[in-house]
Image (cartoon, rainbow, N blue to C red; front, side, top):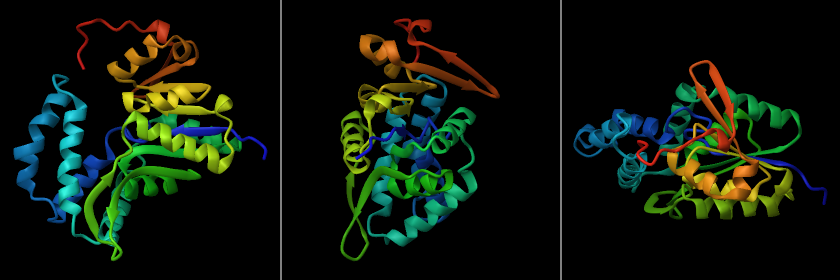
Length: 248
């Protein structure tokens, strides 16, 4: 089998400019599936702390994921797929220009373009369809034989899960990792960077940049792209200093 080049993209913070699950959460509130009070009582403070850069994004994300899992338990898959479709129709173009251009580049080059995301698989599928991905994987919220959500989840937001996912796609499509690309923004994407020949960090977190700079092999081959407003800055890990007291 002829080896092909792969291009693996994280979604939240890498393609989409924020978190898709946040938009899904808002839709579930509007649909009366999640009580609005839960946002104010359990999520709002974590969001504000992260937005002010005095809190951790993972704390905010994990709380949203916890409530999301509780809320969809007992619902039919079709309900969530319908809401996911509406979210992406309304918000799916809110993406980074650089990442959008790179997806087009890889598609035009005949590469296998794959989304590897921690967002709910229903949302990832909609984004993958919208932006022309060949395949995708997201966090799987499990259903029973009647397509009812059980409350069980197979997460895909951590580095170990993404490592397993990449190997699955390598076996499925005969991908040559040395010529392949990976795009991500958080420490959960680090395993993708370890596997491919061309890792690209997009608006990376302090934790991800620290991991890159601590690994000589990855630091030597990684590129860093920062997109702000309509400007893009192309850097190398050597260009970036991480002060010990840097905010999260």
